[in-house]
Length: 164
Image (tube, rainbow, N blue to C red; front, top):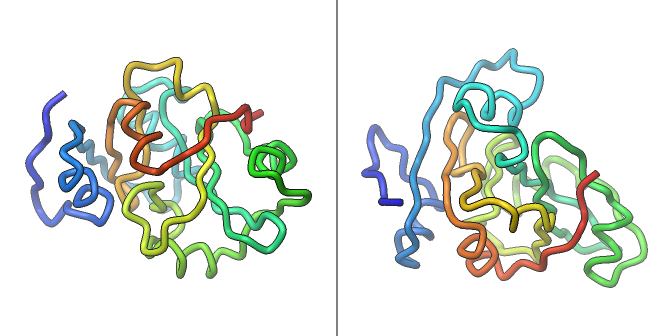
């Protein structure tokens, strides 16, 4: 997989982090429809990729600490499993404004890569079943494709069964 040149201001903190790490990746852009039912579902459909290979980045509050959960867009984040994966007791979805402030991204474009303040990250273990996966590249309508091992390494993530 080769790096794809940035076009039209597609450089984001996520792609900058990937370039700095020397990780191979491909950027995939699509026209985001503000009326789309879900951001991740829209990405999978418009890119023609199975929904199990496109992952959404969700920010949760685990015992008062913001934590990132990354799960396939075809499923949901199991908050109890996320809490257990990081040794916590309770988890709830983070306040959207807190997620945006912490990550530096807007909802629907939060990437697990290049966050303003890196958070503890847990990837659903299904990520390891694919040769490459797609995650947000840092804005709506932009995905980055990379090897799961590179995603795990760059986010310093744990892998655990956190999707349902």
